[in-house]
View (cartoon, rainbow, N blue to C red):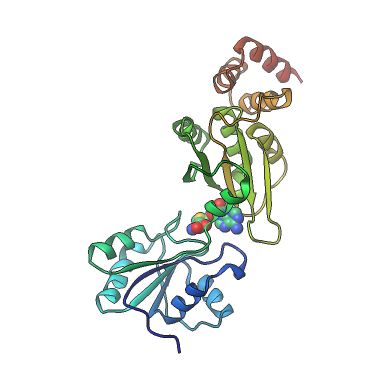
Length: 280
Ligand code: SAM
């Protein structure tokens, strides 16, 4: 039988794909906890079954958190150990748990971390983009106008930007990123630690063109290198890709203006090129 851990809340990371990435401490903590609080008890039940762990599973998800939280805090008050997990990766990282940790701490309970995989850090580490400073900004807004405005807010941040993105929106998000941020390097990290893992690098314009075509599947992290780290000047194809993305949403003059702002290129020449592209 697993030893009873000390009372308190344990924030336990689980794999983001490859089950071999669970840590020894995670297994021990999950096996010994009085209760395992999970976003989706069926999903976590399968993970626990794989490791032959028989645990008391309770739900802690985004929708029910407000009424589930007092029950978990009551368990902590009673001297129990509670492990919090999410469907994948590190809880609280675009996943439920923030208020639970905040309230558990405020109530004087011990809160421990059992660290492990997390998609943003995994993606950053394989992207080949600068890692000395990075800003993880969760999911971008789903509507283009709000997304462009959010990207604009982050444009001057001197760090690699890291976002989560749904596969069916990745092309549109990259087109907006290319248009607002101009000639910056990016990476698309897909299905990390899984069978079809890929990491594609390129300028944002090239990535927008690549992911604008066809259907993309799987789980995705988008990364954008910091301003000033651009790989030289844009080639013609990059400029055309930026203009085409802009032309899909606005008239030629506005598209030329936007691309000029993002790239520093001459607005009149961009306008001429935009008109030519429109004709073809
Ligand atoms: N808490 C999790 C973590 O620490 O990685 C992230 C949860 S968030 C709701 C889920 C998003 O993470 C997915 O939509 C995707 O953008 C990203 N993600 C999760 N697993 C991934 C993987 N194996 N490869 C690439 N991205 C992944």
